[in-house]
Image (cartoon, rainbow, N blue to C red; front, side, top):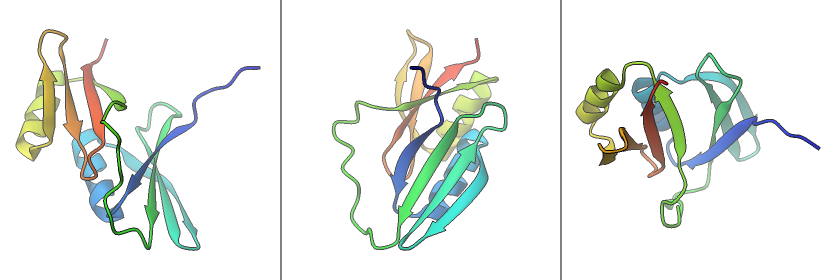
Length: 120
């Protein structure tokens, strides 16, 4: 038995705001959209890898999602680490930095953390 990664899901409260955030902060674009009874799924792509980030919007959800203790995250590599950091600082979404390890985290509008790493 073997498996390959397909996508990861984040549930969001404001789909438009989240799509705009991921476009501006990370250059992720909408690959496809699924409309269902009471929900919308938007799959975001980096345009390079087959991996997708699925944003799930539930029409009747109003309260913030419980993200536990923020111990899980999505990690992304960027070509220009300094430019990415400057953009994220300007956006006000940097939530944690570890300069010793050469990484930092940004927080999306729903409180999910994304680790930013330099390209290797």
